Length: 138
Ligand SMILES: [Zn+2]
Image (cartoon, rainbow, N blue to C red; front, side, top):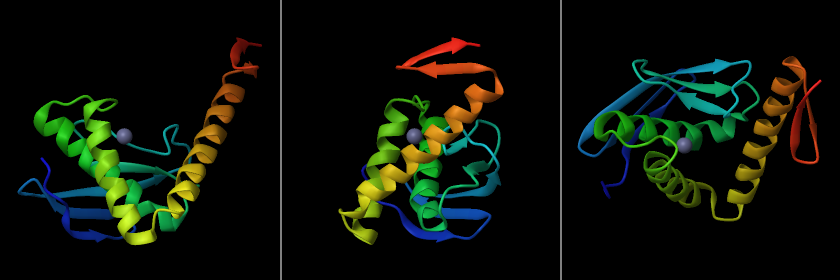
């Protein structure tokens, strides 16, 4: 699975690309709150994005989710381990080639910012308190 992606096409609601000898295509759905900024699940040909994700970052994020979903479903890889690492590698390679290595910091920072906000609103909604790295039920 060292082959690169090609034929990448992305619109507001769909991503398609060629990878590992396959044509892969998923719907894209923007949701109000996505804990992991972007996600996917088995049995559903859809990738989900948090509404706060800047438009310019949707493509690399969609590449990550599409590759991860594909390799996890096809090869039974773990989405938090091997599958995630393969996706990250391809995503970063595309990102650096397209935007340059310097922008990678901004991208990761943006991701962390959205995730932290989602995490804090989750805690608040479920009446938890976050203090010095610990979570308490209020
Ligand atoms: Zn991942």
